[in-house]
Length: 118
Image (cartoon, rainbow, N blue to C red; front, side, top):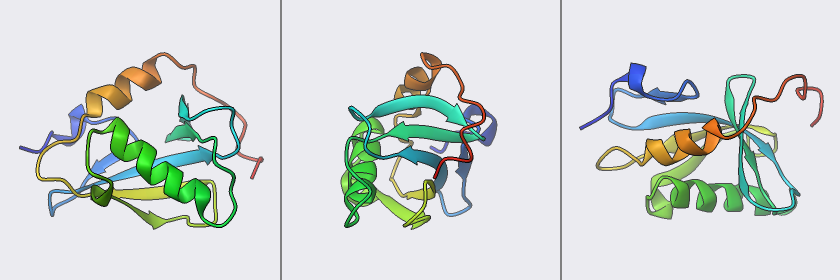
């Protein structure tokens, strides 16, 4: 059963085919992987991986799959391959663990004004 759009975080969009799109802002080269709240209406994800040779993109997909309790194959990068602003596509037979994502963002203060970096 798919969660109604009004129950999803603002950076998640439910799609007609039963999948979801997640808008993220990625900060590669961080001290460790983790969520850092929201930025410009996107989920801010810090990744220890550097933004070279697709390492940060691969780390992002693996991190999000772990966070949402999904197999890695359920999370793909739809756009933003070379940018900090990315769009992820989630395909799963049932609702991902949105609560773990929401709980992790609740602990963090929203970031403002970082849009000029990257």
